[in-house]
Length: 270
Image 1 (cartoon, rainbow, N blue to C red):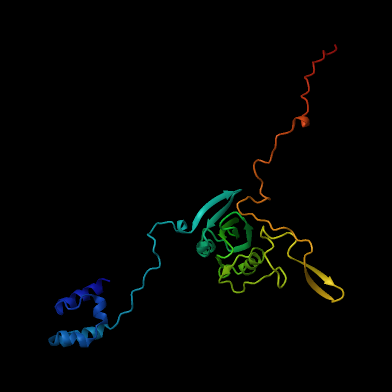
Image 2 (image 1 turned 120 degrees about the vertical axis):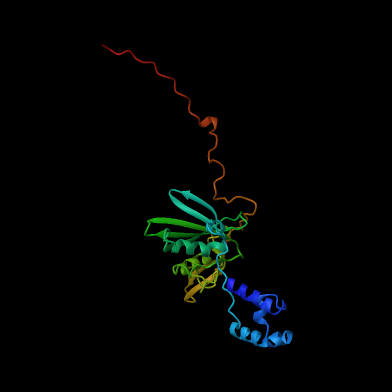
């Protein structure tokens, strides 16, 4: 940078200030310089021929100031339960977070044990995607959680952990969470042509179709259910599987037992 500024000042002083910046000097052809100052042909053409078109300066990929903790840009919330750490991050930060946890020498979470999903119908981002990591070197386990809904995808981490390929397919098959840039995102547990996602809480327990083997056709057939379950709407209400309150009701009076009277101490026989 200092050398380019020196060349800029030298050219500007010699050409009488016609050229304003080093970038304009590098892009200006010798013919224009000669037309502006015909008496200085030898200096201008030789200088431009020596400089040529220098390559653009490479910019540093590190935008944050030195000493700043990069975890603030990725980790939203952290919690500890039974000596196990859980990190909550946005979907856009899941790739950077898992890469850091895998490669940093003080983490070394080299194994992705599982990817699971949870459905919370009352939340705006109803699905919670949980990554379970294991560090053999430090004998430590870690959970990383992110969120999604029916249409917003989560970046695939199959390029970081190869085991994530089938794990993400299972979450997609059971919950319908889309993973962006997955190499082969298709169902893995349910049958071909299956409708719906079984582990969503609004999925009927009886399903939509009945699968049975037909003796006459000698094959498996799919038939509509004769007795279908009513649709469960969880919008604006708590899930029926989540406990509300402390779970204790006051005991009715007729269930209460009378308090026994204290017995008098009998004198001891000598």
